[in-house]
Image (tube, rainbow, N blue to C red; front, top):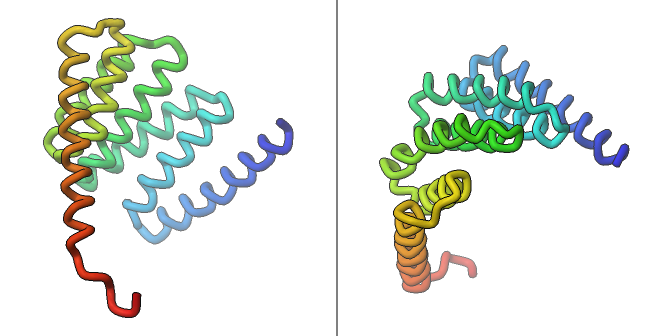
Length: 159
């Protein structure tokens, strides 16, 4: 375990260096993504309050950029941390805030995962369960359609 924690520490150091460079260069996209990664590392290190602070910063950066996908994912990351520390109501609120974003983007997989998380947190299998099942079916249909389109495309030159 000590080795794994050392690896996390080294990874965190590298991402902190990247964050500093992104800020120096004014690269808000890289800054937001790096804050999100640092939040995930803080969660792995069992530092939930630090993870919340980092994911909150990434959420602010994604919103400032108008990056709706990043915003939705940051909300889901925050929900995960709150769920893990027993703050179920806050986790539900964050998931409910992310759901319309994934619907707006047409991201059926994230919509399904969010609906399923809500179902589990609420402890119900009723309406939200049916919505999650419908979202899953639609995501599977979309994946099948993409696979068929890919099969119909001519191979790339040189292959």
